[in-house]
Structure formats: structure tokens, C-alpha cells
Image (cartoon, rainbow, N blue to C red; front, side, top):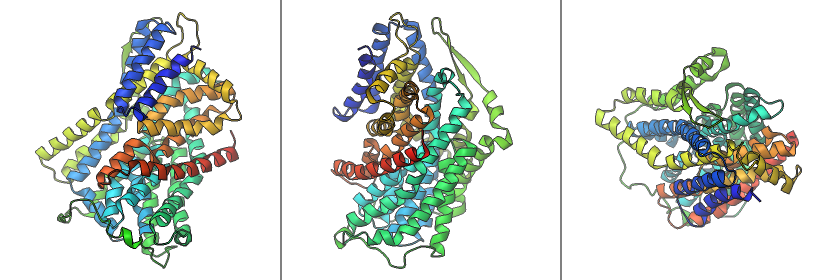
Length: 543
């Protein structure tokens, strides 16, 4: 019965965000308050222990917020420096077949933005670009969201993986045969093994929904015509994505996979490799749906294409040099740290901050500073960029992240209460394991991740809410914790297709009004298809 009091704050957050339409920050803040009450009055933990756990959650959330701030800072700098305009101009010279444009812009360019920034920016950036190329606004948002799925697995320089690992790490000593490095390595391999086949399928699914939903005839022929090219583009992303995850950690796979995939696919378009000879067109009733961006044409960007891409090249280079084990730089950076002691009653808590290992600082903020000179930005423009990035970070995900991480830290640090219960996560996991059993639980795991992403707007928050719980459930059921946490993160990534925040943001950029619910309903089908592919791969590779 006491487990119910652990679930109530989590369920309250979901209900508040979906049915009551309360913002994620407010919802999670209320849920944190409820979890504090559970800790104090049900588990009967000392108040100082609850305060210490919340404080640890605060500092862990600040680490994540630095990544978000740095990512926004990069994008705002590129936008102010007209680099984004130059990148868009470079795309306009490619194929005029909408099927090819979906693959290049929504799948690969969106994947590149996801790898560097994440947090809803890819769909919001790709959709207006597609509309500018003649896509109906609803179609542009739909395919941008569908494609913003597999890349999310390691988006925002791996922030969702890092968040999950930071929350699970305290649990690892109790898991037989697991240590931090081994768990991380196994998790990355499991994510790419299970999600890799979906990486081949998602470009095909996006094109299928585009051609069937917005073509003159509801036919599979346009999709079959471009099937070899779509599979090739998926392979061009998945191969470097998987190799990078195996050898370089969670920060680089999406960034490098999308970069290499984009170059390879653009070369294929240039040399007409696997590109259909026939051109597909939208149904006549959709041709009037042009760009909902300002009608007056802006002056062409004066920024050369090579200069516009330089910040992304530098980000990739810095992450490669600092993360690849062959250079032996990461251990040095990790040792440059400071400790913040927190009161914890009989269990003192210390937060260790290795600040140079945070991607938000190195390389995002560093590259953003360099880009000021690269694009010749003035002092007032730079000040405006930094103010915007700070405002979007503080006024956007800050409260949700701090509240969510603090709530999870209370759950993790809940052992030793006067009530005599085991830790909250262990008790909850035991109840979930008893309800489902080892055979059925893997089928449930990715849907928990989808739900977390759907309601919170973020794969990162989904991992914060549910990754520790899934880890403990796997242990109780004697199935692979690595595999179950991988399915949790994959589900969180797939949930971006229907995540309320992303849908609203992307629709707003192209002025799609009143279609949010319809879009979520349509994209639920690709979600089901993708999760089905993932589960098939997971059972093939085994647990």
C-alpha cells in the first residue's frame, strides 16, 4: 500500500500536464512537493536527508541546464550571424523532389540540429525550411516530428543519456557484476542495437506518410520508388551513429552520424545515386499552402557556406578530441573539479562538479564565443544573444528539470527511514515486477519512456522520471537492466513524434492553427510502428 504514495506524485504530474494543461514546470514542482510529503510522513525520513537529496537534485539539474543554455546560445549566435540563412540557402540548390527534401532536411539536417542542440529545436527549425520549399505547413510539421525520433537517442550532445546515467549511478554498486563504465558501454550498445533498424525505417515512414497523406493519389508507388534512396540515407546515418556510440560515448553519435549522413546523402543526390527519375508532387489542393513565414524576401545571407558550417565542425572536433579515449584528455578534464558538501544526516551527500566535462561549457559556450568573431557580431548583438539564451533556459525548462531531478533524488536517497521500508525505487520496482512478470515487462518498458516524453516534452525529463525506476524493476525481475534502460531511453526518443511541447512549437513556427490534436493522432501511427520495430530488434538481440 505504501508504494501507492510513491506513484501518486508521478501520476499527478502526468494528469496535471495532460488533462489539466498545467505547464511541466508547475506540474513537476507540485509533484516534488508531494514526494517530499511521502518521504517525510510515509517513509519517515529525516528532514535533513530530504533536503540534502533535493539539493543534490538541484545541482544535477544545473549541470543539464548548462547544456541547454550552451545549445541555445549556439543556435542564437548562428541565427544572428546569418549562418542559418546561409545553411538554408545551401539546401535550396538540391533536389526539387519533396521526398528527397524530407530526407535531407527533416531527417539529416534535423538530426544534425538535434545532435548539437535538441530540446525541440530540430522540428521548429526544419518545418519552416520545408514550408519555404513549398510544403503544406501541416505536412512539414508532420515529417519534421516523425524524423525527430532516432536522432533524439543521443540528442543535445547526449544530455538524456548523461541524465539517466547520473541518476542510475548511485544504484550500480548494488547491482551484481555492474560498474559505471561497463553499464554505460552496455547501454550505448543496446540503444544502437535496438534502435538501429528503426533508423533505417524512419525515413521510409516519413516519406510514406507524406505521399499517402498529401499526394494526388493514395498510392504506395511514390514510396516504393524512393525506397532504396531512403534506406541508403538511413544507413548513412546509422552506421557512423552506432560506431561513434560504441567508441566515443553518448555526446557524439547523433552529431557525427547526421553530419556524415548528410554529406554522403547530398553527394548521392548530386550524382543521382538511387534518386528516382520521376518527380513526385503534392496534390493540387495543397499547392497553395506556401510558406507561412514573412512574405517579403530578406536579402541573401552574406555568410559563405563554409563559414556557416564552421561552428558545427568545431563542436564535432572538440567533442572528438576530448571524448575519444585515444587522446586521454577526458580523464584530465574530469579531475578538474570541485565538491559541494550537502547535509544528509547519517548519510552525508557531496556533489562533485567536473565542469569542463559538461558539453554546455566545452564546447558549446567556447564555440559560441569564437563565433562572435567569426561572424563579426557587434557588442549589442552579442548581449541580445546571451540574454535570449539565458531567458529561454531559465524561463523554459529550468523549473521542470530542477523539480524533476530533485524528486528523483529523493526517491533514490530514501533508504533508512524510520518506517523501515526499502528505498522508494526498490519498493516500486518490486511492485511493478510482481504485476507484469519478466516475460511482459520488456513490452511495457518503451511505452513508459514514450509516456514520459509525451507529457513532459523531453526525452531527458522522461529519463529523469523513469530511468531509475526501470533499472530497479529490471533488477527485481532478473532481466537485463541495461536492456530495459535502453528501451526506456528509446521510448523517450520515439515520444518526440507526439510530444505536446514539440507539436505546439513546430506548429507555431509555420502558423498551423487548431491542428495540434490532429497531428498528434496522425503521428501516433508512426510511434506504434517504430516501437514495434524496436521491440522486434530487442527480442532478436535478446535480453
